[in-house]
Image (cartoon, rainbow, N blue to C red; front, side):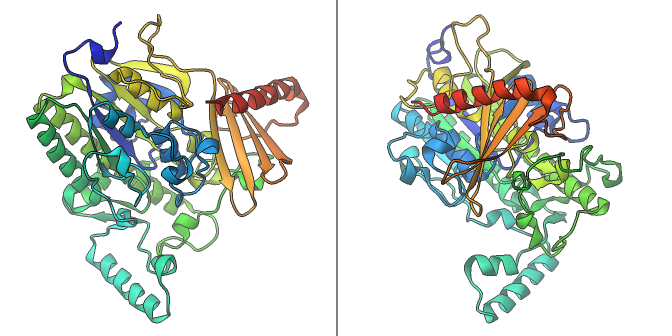
Length: 477
């Protein structure tokens, strides 16, 4: 099959949709609870990757990896306040490669981490969301509470992050309001306006990146999306206990949520709160799903759909009580695995790829689909090969890592087809502190660490060898 870009008169456009904190809790991925008809429709018209994994389960490092095509150990980005242009200045970003190939490139919402705007990537100014815009509440009682706390905090001499924590609003809001009153609805509307502008001047192809903020906490969505669910009928995590023999630093505290006034300062999450959190997260998914639907419908209405590549991805997964954890920041399946869907001109509809893939593969795949040269040094592989018997395929490994800055410990995890193998090392000395081994055929919930068990000794030895080989090879340019 000829490359997508050369089988048509015009190079394909790209609509690049990033969704914050979205785990594969979607109808297309088998969820029977979540209402996600628009993303499900996109998957039915394109290629869905069943087992896609981020390289780092935190927003900033994950996005830096996707946008540069480099792994975190290459970019050196392990924290949200780091910028890839400073740590990897010679690495052209994905939109930058498209810009150099003659594309109009524009970003709306949260594409790179909030507040980061990489000028060389874009031909048009990005619609930049203020750093805490994801906390935009609309309930008057909440706004009054926040204003009161801000006044108190300022009187106490607080400022910056300390003041934001003191005046933090609730972890969830359900308010009867239109979609555009919250940032994600506004982002979708602005994106549609940009698509309309592109449609009026079709001579130059476009790369439009749209980053939605939800379902990142605080879980804020119009009430109508909350009303899609009956909280009492929602299921709870089937495996709510920490894995047997897992090291303590495999987990992180609930710092993101503990400052919220409607969240306990300490202790376990009871059933009522767990149900509310799952309800809130699902409502936010449905809210974002509706915005995705607006974008897809606009492509159809503007006559752009037939020559536009659409990619949708969540920057990492999210625990909803599984393994006794909430949010991300782990190397477990619930944090490392996230949705990845492509829809491209002249490509199969409803295809599901069950092989492992990595988010670092997004960059070369989009370049290949658009007929753009893949820059030297990118560390993923194209998931689309126009000359292969099976042109859409993955590979047999995925690598994810997380850094515990306070302890100076790095967790590096190898996801193999059947197993997950993780090593925790002290970064200064390289000392191996702990290992984890999970058998997904017998224990898909990762509830028991098999590392060190005699019945898995040969398997662990092989995984350890594969781990060392693949991590070293993955960093080679």
